[in-house]
Image (cartoon, rainbow, N blue to C red; front, side):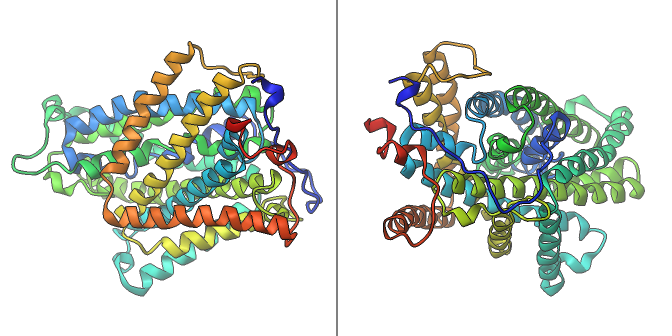
Length: 467
């Protein structure tokens, strides 16, 4: 089967916008990717709490090779080959047909909006150290909802604005970590890096791997913005390369500095501990600066993830998986306002779950989507080698299979160690996604809404695998 046998997605051009949006260039794209994935060392602390300094350091050294680099490489190849809004949804639909494209959309969208809900919580976990009133009760609820709505409005003002805001936020939020690491150098005792944790403290592998996964995944989320990027075939590979290096370094340097310079009980390494370490190393002034940086980092994380979720909705509307009205853009800012609104409301709805459950549920749904993404990548390489790929991962097909199998094994492990709550939430959402696909199909048959024609439907097939 060659390229001519594959269904071609046919996105429609939105007509509601009256302005032409500015395209994302290399620098803003790098920092959007950075905030899609990391946003700084904020949130890496539980890895030390779960397994001790040595395993935490090894985790952030090794895990990028197992997970981050393969995912970034696949994102670079498929985004440059199919550069449209929707990203991984387009890939799954192109490989296996509308059903799998829709299910991919369900898994990744819900994973994304659940993940969005964690960022205001992470921000408040740092800010409450300055304002203890935000620790619980109605002040905390008001802070979560208010910050979510305010940040969503910023996203509504335009992707180009969000991109340049991300650059500024990254510089400001990382500055205290750079300063803390430099001040910590004379206090570092290298033997502390070799500690496997306190005696008698049982290792929490669930927390350890979910922390690594949560801090180093979502590389492919930026693919949903491909239609908004200037010269994506050239820009995406370079942006992903720089972002991978930048992200890994931003995690490792503070981790080496703090674990080597600060000796505390392992139990104190909870989310937000870097602020306490800053006070121990340099004084309260650096602690306050770092806590402000955490709030700014959470803003960047929220904006980047919300952009991806909103443009995923837009892309799914452009290829007919969702009704046309789901792709409506703002007349003033040309942003997908309906996608932003829906993503925001869902994230508020799940923001009052336990923080660990939020991370675990997002990871589980994301794992399902990634297994499908790896399958789509290999299928398109095997069955459609003639697709023009401006960036192509070097290596033979068997080598690519191995590259996908290693992270897939980790995905399965993440799913196996999930809690019953996560299984329940993820199962309900998956069944809901399957039901939603057939409901949309009924809407098409009954003509209850207008749809763009997807490539698969235009060619009269449900799945490339069956053609």
